[in-house]
Image: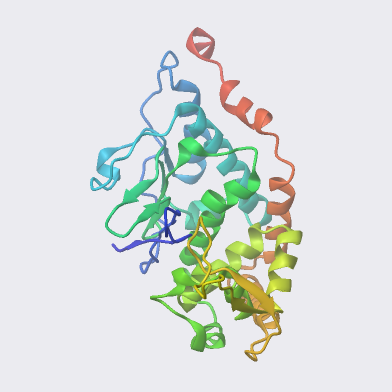
Length: 342
């Protein structure tokens, strides 16, 4: 089974990269875990989260939510640390609220049980790769297992951070699972065929990518990643963020140079810094992005009987209005010890 790495950002001059590859194999909808789990010990320190995961992931979705890091489930080439218990609680309740509950409401309660991943594995640190100067923040393997890194630095008070490091990734990878099950229209692949750059997309400025009709730099790597990124960005970006993307797509962009004639790069990402100029490349980025969204919208309707805009609306409502303390209470309010036995 091939592992897919979805790269979020390039780490140049100390910047960070989220790297995923794409999956090729269809997800088997049959259960691989028994929902008859070993009896939990109500006196154990982790009982509340274990009970929450059993009741909200294992039983309804046949999914193992693994927050106790397993060496056999992680790449031994990296020096990794486990996810902190409190951070695991936060990501467990947020994943249910911002992803699983959304599909339950918009599609059906059985949809993610049939097509969702079977394992979500939390790891506290990112995975540093000194060979190519990157830091892996997430990994999806064959549509079966999703590993989420950097959990210990998660900022639950910023839905922008939550989307960037976790939930956009989840929607992206789930789009791959869906299109491997029911192929998306191949006309999508032809729209931007001239502008895909599998080897050099990491060096592209995001505004330049928008002007070429892509929702992100990673979208410009190849067609199937473009399709998944189009869906993930459309779902998670706020109206203001989406409108800004379309505005950027209407402009041309030109490399900025310093007084010595050297190209200016961003101190954090290492990407070229570009200034808006008259759009002279003949590519209508805004129209292309909207065309891609329309193809995805129609595919969701025809292939899955799903309303992409309803899905987006539900995500937007939830990510702008979640109460993290109320969500935490779903775990911390679970009775323990003798109280759990009564």
